[in-house]
Amino acid sequence: MLYPIIPMYLQQVGYGTWAIGVLEGIAELVAGFSKIALGRLSDVYNRRLPFVQLGYFLSVVSRPLIGLTSYLGVIFTARSLDRIGKGIRGGARDAMLDDACEPEHRAEVFGFHRSMDTLGAVFGPLTALVFLYFRPADYKSLFLLSILPGLVALIIGFKLKEKSTNPLQVKPNAQKLSVKLKTYFLFYKTAPKGFLNWLGIFFVFALVNSSDMFLLLRAKESVVSEITVLQLYMWFNLCFALTSYPIGRISKHVGLKPTFQVGLICFSLSYFILASISPLSSTLILFLAFTVYGLYYAFTQGIVKTILLNQVNKESKASAIGLYEGLNSFGLLISNIVTGLCWYKFGAESVLWVIGFIVMLISLVLSFKKNKFN
Image (cartoon, rainbow, N blue to C red; front, top):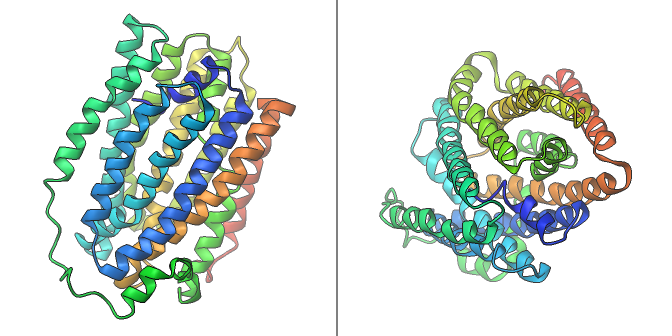
């Protein structure tokens, strides 16, 4: 409900693309550190559900705060709390999902999870669309309205039951690890080589994969109506939701790496289309761009986690996902700040063309990596 509204709200209260880039980048970095540390903590204590519940709680209570003020400090704090919530729940939630399935069904399970998660990103903006139709640009009331579905999600979350994992049997050295925060960031020292190889590829991609908010701003530059921007965001998520699960199933037959490469190609094509549009372009071209971008998500989101979890043992699942998410967030910090500044200085077209070509190059390089990245 709120994600596509945030960039338009920030512009309404006077912030430009550079501020949006810095805000999103630093928020992602804060989330990244929490993902690394708390993913490790979840493995140390062999617990998942408390991390999941606390993470969703922080996101639900923090997001509405963004729309209650125009002060960047408060907006930054609220956005950071939201991302910390994501960091707390991310690794534990993915490990919890993985605990409930056989290894050969990982891609399907994560694809299905992304489909259901993304359906919420269809119905949420649809609610915002109806609201803004009757109350145009009333963003603050919309932020307050978002509390209601958040409370429903919390109630459902606290009714979940965790699979029995002997929670009182703390692993050796757990108390020592819980005191020394720095030890949570050292999983890479014992991680398998295959995991680290893939982690390097994903980190390079993160360095050019800036926030989706920039794509929404690009769409806003091309169409006057905020309603159309919301429709594009809903369409993108619908494409993602409808294709994520079947692509997860197909990946078992065609391979994880080729599936990921197709996703990178879709990413580049969507950026090329958005770089080519003008205020006179047909709205259909924008919908084509966001369709291809939805396919990029479907071809990569569940696949990335499946690839990484295939490389580690069951005792390190949350640590592996936490390290990936943390490095990914650090890459996004750099990418968002650089993209925001370059967007402001050189314009959207140049930025989108350059990013698209870099990602296409990453996909081509992967074609020559056979044995190291199995």
